[in-house]
Picture 1 (tube, rainbow, N blue to C red):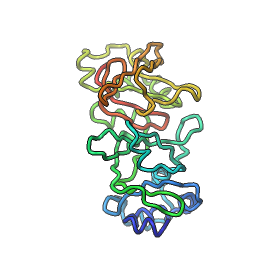
Picture 2: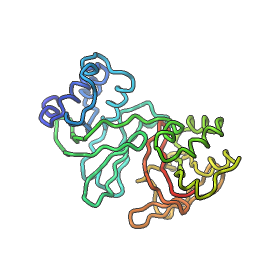
Picture 3: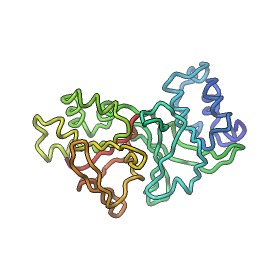
Picture 4: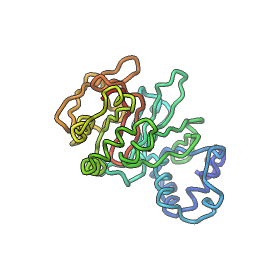
Length: 274
């Protein structure tokens, strides 16, 4: 692994994972079969951080997110519309399942991006490099650690109205942050503007945009899990039909404008309509 990461141009990432005994134990255990390693030119940790022994909890989580316990080659990542990738991050609130990241292969040029926390994406710039335990994909950055729905909605720059809705329905927002396996369809600010606002019905509006997956048969709504013809039942008791048309995804008639904002307890998508 050390030789392969150096040869791939990922020496700083190697220093990063070797700087923490627990993280290095994971990577050298044989359990990690696919590694998403940032290139040296894209690694943005400070020299002081790299010299420090033991990573911060957030850095440990970022390292765990880059470690896939299955062998996921580029052909799997290129499956349309993408692939849900289980990582070694055990901090997720997904009823015991590990945190995921999600590949997106819908680009016309054949490139693959991977979405993580807040919907931030990294590009795969070199793929399927072998090491003794599996494969390395070289990326242009570390994955972003997932943040709670309330913080994610504030960070997008396009969903301030939904963020305000969460603030007004504080008890409901707290419940959403703690409910496992949620899928949230967040209307954009322009979508709210087209409706003239949401009045005083904060809880009702929130409930109409949240789906909770219960049981193994109901998958969290990461984009690759959404299928045309599927009908989703919201927390408010309504239904949303899924339609896929020309590579675009529509939920109850609302187009997904930005997909796979990974949450600790599920996923959010920004949609074009309330």
